[in-house]
Image 1 (cartoon, one colour):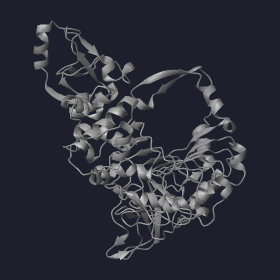
Image 2 (tube, helix red, strand yellow):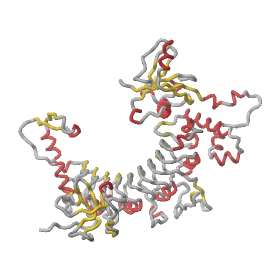
Image 3 (cartoon, one colour):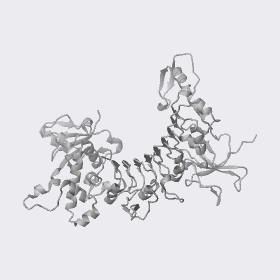
Length: 564
């Protein structure tokens, strides 16, 4: 009996690789039928669907296609319940109370004796009790007849269907509609075609959706979003996104507004335009968390307001439309911009205009942190430029640190010799900070210079030595301390604020010594006391500022690997 051929768009698994059928038929110059497959892993591909100059199919990812023959070794997947039963139902072994089990993480090298496995098998066999189900990489490709999934496991709240053979959203909906309490759904590493008609009741309680590495576009997500009236969080990382607005973009009106989605994650894409992101997400009126880590954003334009009070970017991109807001992200609290290409302080100046309520920001890995002119002042300048900021790169901003940062920034501006108009144009926070701190750069005739230059006096110099071996000794005679420090492999002098927390100070030291990320968790700091004792800066008190530890100008520290 000849093997039945798959349809275009079907998903398959062959020799451990997953792919999508893009072509079924003959290929010129050969005999028989071929399958043109776009592989999920581009390394498995050989071309874009072109053979001897003739195009047979196209691929979403360049050079991810190839031709294979139909074969019994190709799997087109199993139903949801077949995969569920195969994974969660195991026949009790009976007999002895204990069994020998090989630990999978040991590669077959470790064998242990386990007790009561039949009892665990018996509990898992009650599928109706399941609340969290993981069918990651189980070749799921279709739903079961209506009613069967609901009768088998109606209580599922979290479902992982990552890396399967599901061809489209119609199959996802056919499974989800049978799970009335479904709240969390992971579809990572699938390839899902949009459906013409999607059952709106399938996702009525869904709150969290993971679509990483699915090649889902923003337009496709916006098309399914109305079917998810309770959705709060979505992840769209590693989808090769360069632009969010598609070729058929349209301005959003009040009828398109979403009032539930609070978190969007675009980690690991290729997004370049901040204005494009603002435009595309303009309908998410309650967005609180936006992750743009590891993209290619190089500029954040300053928004401008037109005659009608609507926002438009200085690049000329109109982000208006019916019901447009004066701030595109009025509710945004958390913004992740780490590992992009931001290199100018004007980009940081623009952020409060887009996100007036911004409380948490990540900037690590951007060129601006390596600015040779302001390298030592990146953190305080960023804090001063964003008045609402409470957390920067994972470290809390204390009231003392904010005050010192703002005063330091004001002092820097006053020394540039700018006119008042230039100060306001180049440093948007100048007026607000000057008013807040009663700051004036006009010297008082009777005041000595030392009293006027208060910010310079706030900075202290500390010396850090990198130990050659492990932790320093508990103590040394005073005359041997210099010898120990001289034997260290490197030394750096840093100027810091005494109100800086130990946690922030440690991050600054690790960066100065370029400590690899893999070693940062075991790196510790010891303060060298005048009597020759070495005092460890305990993690328990990492939130305390340097002045609490008694750190003064000229203090000495040792950076070493904690081997205990």
